[in-house]
Length: 633
Ligand SMILES: Cc1cc2nc3c(=O)[nH]c(=O)nc-3n(C[C@H](O)[C@H](O)[C@H](O)COP(=O)(O)OP(=O)(O)OC[C@H]3O[C@@H](n4cnc5c(N)ncnc54)[C@H](O)[C@@H]3O)c2cc1C
Figure (cartoon, rainbow, N blue to C red):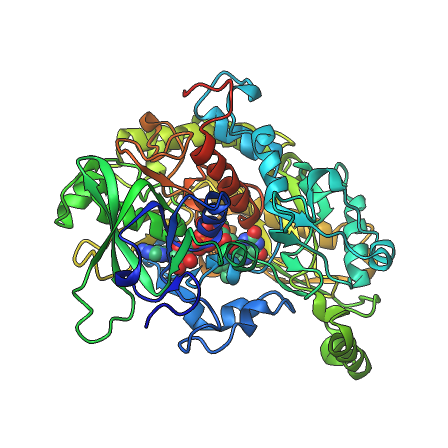
């Protein structure tokens, strides 16, 4: 009665007794791994997902909001697809609380995200390997750009922009950095990196305006791993002109394999162990029917439990399973199985800054404001969309942005780099932070200090709108670290406690101030934007010193671009790590974490594409072990 279709289950009590692998969380990473592991037709996998399969249930009427690409943000319009947790009040942000948002539906955050398809730079990935191998040799870890490039290619199917829009907008791309349609083992295509059929001409002009500032690099393709100004694709099926995500690209491929099972509306409470070897998971229904509430179903596992519940919930699952900082677990009444101080620490997200500039004389039309101001343009837009899904409505959040290294942004890059090196790092972490977690933080800060002085890491992101107002500015490498811990008063029935600890490293203020000062330079003292006659609406001329910026940031920034990462970091155990280079949790047999929580440091770009690549790589690590020639650190 609960076997709704194929291998989809609505209750954990109906699934098989035991599987080779159990994947906790049917999100971006979880569905990717489950798809790859079941490709052989034999390996049995159960995916346990908290949310629902959209449109297949009555609880969720339709998945239109998920499919819609127009504007990029329809995905967050349906609250039933989202976890929303309120963060702790942020001491440095005038005690504001922040909405912590993540996908809660089959597909996870890939179902609700803004579809920006970015990868970051070579150095973002070199850094990951260097935490294990500090010999400066890029080749010594398989966590490196070269170690990930094949997986970026496998993860996405690149569908180039149409010829007309490419020519008109001057889009550049290089297919050498991408996988192409039909390259998959069975000839099908996983997730698409597609392109809209239209670009606002102002976007091209705003790209060109960066030529008015010395030293800004222009990069031919977003997948090249370089910092600079470039075009990038959208997670979009080019034929349907709909979101392409882990559900369409992975679940739908796997759904009719006998050896792939998915149970929805089900929460993994904890992993079950025999000693320190995982033997299964305990699952409870999310919306219990009468009498169901207390019913915990134990599902057995032969090989491994793969935790892929995302940056907010993976540390929760581990902590509830007795794996985490001993003091925290004890105060929650949970017996410690492995004292692993890093679980839930090292929490990172990309802060959003919202300086506002308006052009008083923006002559380039059509532009996004014309959708409201020009009835003819708006009608034309609707006609194109209704006829064949082309035109401005095929645009999500846009496809061009600046991703710039700090030496180009700031005249004091070397000073700030030195200040970060010599800073007392312990002052930026909570008192009583475990020495290993502090050591890991110090290692990150030293790495980011050299990144501040280099052209290989992007710190600044300005999203280009093509219109008369500017897009958001993002700090791509924040220095502050937060925590995601279980609520010790009622750990099993409450959301995790999320503390961004925004601006807890005071150098974040100086860096962010310079990001705004550079944005001013682009708009207000750039020969190539001069004619547009910009006015600074926010923060406004009165904000000049770092101290004045600190006050402004307290009132205005969001510490989250919805990219929660780092809470089960892939770092050596002596650096507060939670998983090793094979993504295995320290001290346990048969448990890996595969999702954004393993990123030891954020990448200089949005996180979805990196999650897909990490998941593809994880699937190979699980099936075949580490690549030949690599020893464990
Ligand atoms: C609103 C929004 C906009 C974004 N915009 C972009 C963008 O434009 N470009 C970009 O690159 N990135 C973007 N991101 C970020 C990106 O989507 C995420 O980093 C990425 O999808 C995370 O993948 P994941 O596998 O780590 O977690 P998720 O995809 O979130 O998967 C975790 C899954 O686990 C499930 N789960 C949680 N706890 C349990 C449990 N106990 N038991 C069972 N299941 C559980 C959840 O329901 C979810 O399905 C955005 C994110 C959001 C939320």
